[in-house]
Length: 543
Image 1 (cartoon, rainbow, N blue to C red):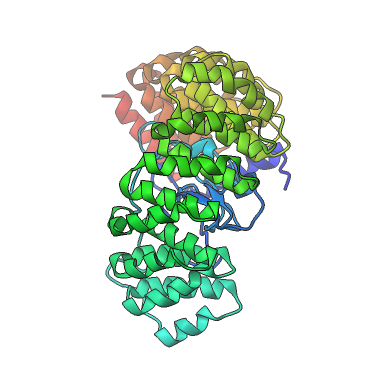
Image 2 (image 1 turned 90 degrees about the horizontal axis):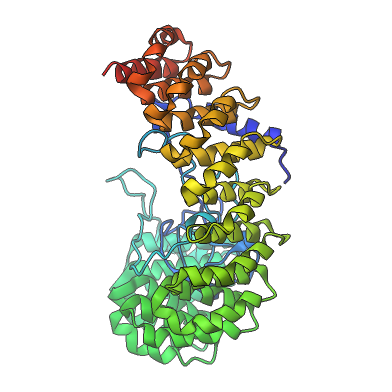
């Protein structure tokens, strides 16, 4: 769906209006939750960490289906908060990166809108989330949504077993979750049978449920590694990897599975071995075999798994570098990200990756472009050569790509301020908004941009004006010259601008004493949150 710039900024304003009922604008926050099971299905593990799916999925590989190593066992992109390092095709759920869109305003608390992922963030997993999460066992989240101490009533086993045979995949997926909630031994065999379900949501939920059952299910899961059914072997290895160190008794069987005839099974087994024992010497050579597989899902998942292993995957680097020329854009960018996680000499690596990422900015897939922009942002910390490329990317017609470029520029620090200041005068309102949000993220480093930020207080777009006020407040006492324009902003038609102007004056502190009469007058504002901000600002100024 194409969204006009005016519509986009209007949407931002509506989102802010929706949030206005909370006590202080600067402490507002929200995080979207993605339900990988679909409507009505509670995900078993909304905050799981795993790696590449390696073949347990059946959907096409594209930027809206960014399997964290799905390699063929899932039909939808994974939520990066789940961080399946190598689902190798055994996973479910949409990859819809939704970081907190309310980054800190004037403190470390979640604050004013500086990214709009709450509105639409259908891709760019790595764009905000790609970093080596490190080895960890999986912290299972609660399986029910009731209040603490009030568990959901358990359904009769007979009803659950009937639902496992339903033709409706969502019904089966929910039945799997219900079995996990029961946490009973009689759940094990039905769950094992669901590892080969034709629907990837169902089978992935089954693998997660078995991992949740832990040692009680360990024997049956190990037996699953020897099944004649490929999906059962994959799902069993996936479940063991999810269990982490608790699955140590399965290591011998898993090392045997690393010789399986199917690369997806081998990949799952290798990931599980590493997650359980951190034995990179055993896991990495097996995973590296998948880098040359004809299935792009396998190549993709292996890249993610190796990236998450990090520097211990050094021996796979030459093979990964070959994938910088892969015909699939998403594979090329993931190869670059994997090398960034594995190689220690980032300065030398930048010379190799910069032309690859720059070329990817012309990819027709916006998700690929967003990933490439994020990679450029990483390189921007090592060289200013990425600066002009990122500045062009801030103009991308896709809003997410453009915002990722702005955030990447912000991460570059001082060197990006001139380019972002220039963006405040762009005729495109989306470019102006992206630029001002990036400057707000820079805090006091944005001092050289104070003049264009003051000008932005009178921008035609509400969102640009309030972000300008936010950015000026973050300059603290260095924004003394902005006090008169901020006083004027206290009567802006948009209450969001009035609110942030009041907060900004408070942040400037004693240097804003000239604003005290205007702030006193603002106590008569019809919006309660503006009144609160005006009073708080006066206290800060008078300290």
